[in-house]
Length: 428
Image 1 (tube, helix red, strand yellow):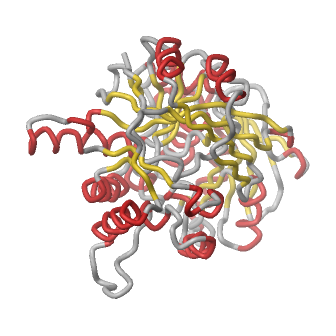
Image 2 (spheres, rainbow, N blue to C red):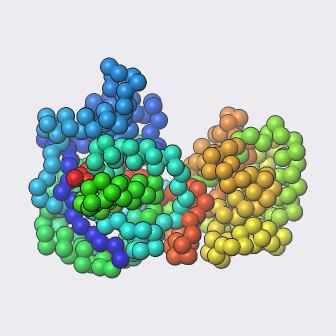
Image 3 (cartoon, rainbow, N blue to C red):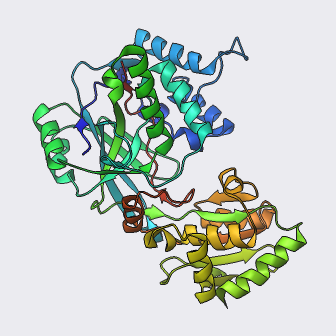
């Protein structure tokens, strides 16, 4: 059972340093050097200064994590940010362009959730890598804060409990981002409303949708605090953004796979071509039908390579199914039916002989959630082969997590992404 609690938040004083549009940022792991600089042009106090820190300007070899803590301390001293005495939750809506360009609205809220090992009220669905966890751990040690939330799903939908409250009070901040997603945020301090929300999702089980590295970092940080101070204190909780599985605006987008080092390897090209003809049913399609979208069946992909430039539809056949069952013999039926797992087992491992390490390190692999970007990479010579995937159904994510399994990397793309900078969760 996961325990929900409000946050004694650290947040921007928008009357002093707003508007929030100049202060918020996307998640740290989608920000490159150019976009980081662009965010800081909007405001030198953008949250990216802390969440994706650099060394001090006068010491290029300095500790960037210590610099983040120093900047945060300075912002608290000069009033850029304030620390609330009263606990709150933060309601938010995200209106975005869904499949087919239809405008949709996802509803959620920020709170704290008591940490638990996987399987004890919290379930994971994706594998993690040590590098990002070490980065987030060093930043957490330095700032003693959760700077951005873990995004998790719960059974049901408590938005009807929150709706009357937000309708009766002004929005705290409103931002339209570069993806044309409109974010609206309300801070809720009424203890009765907060208690009603916690009660409405009593005995919940959380499924992490995005932020596995941050969650596992929080577990490690809690252990360190217990070892050093004999108790976890506030580090026994982690900040989460919670969205109901029944929310009408919840959408999962696909993440497409690209091979980037196969054009120059004739043996691999031959093995791939011959193997696909053996293990998949192949039919030609028009470019407009390359994306498999909501096509029915198990193991269905759009395929295009830079050599033949002929779009085709791949559908796993009986011979391919035998390979899947052999390669994934220890996995559940739910896992073996995942398109991402099928592609990994049949094409990457069986035909191209990639190892787990190759896949984890993205050796010869690239990913994008954007159909158009995948085709642009082929045209530009940045990739040799594109496999277009269908969205992974939320029910499939739940089924795999319920088996205690983790999905292949980049199996899901929950859109839109959450903003960083709404609230920070102090850990003591």
